[in-house]
Length: 193
Image (cartoon, helix red, strand yellow):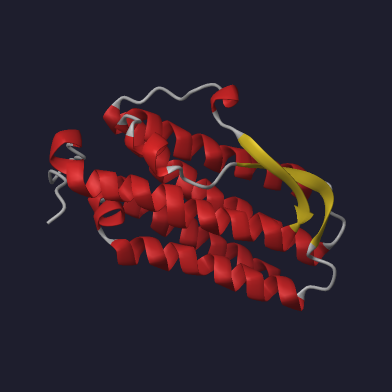
């Protein structure tokens, strides 16, 4: 069973990395592609319910601010928006990784590992965008941390909000500005139609 889960995670990772590298506009221009990835969080919530004690984390997880202040967001450059999203994802990844390493429950460790891989997929996708747009990653102090939680369900909830709010707003900016950003692969020039 454990090998099947690992194989499934590996296939998911390969598929997402392939999507991000081979056809970046598919991810940024196609809301359904992003929704498919978001649905994995619901599966993790279901897995957590079946895992006794999985909601109580062995150590607190520091979470970045996930809410978007519309006026502030509108005044940021594409590079700033991209950097903010990737750094928020990295804060999540680092927090999950730290608490996963302290977990003594195999079930909880497996759940946190899935979440860590999910976050790593997004880090890879947004980092690729950063490279293409020439974005410089800000220092950690540029990313505001808003809360510390001891609950897996709260981590999943806040992570879902990050994806639905900041990542989606970044996708909207890219959809509108793809011709300017010129997301390209070796075979096609990225354009949202």
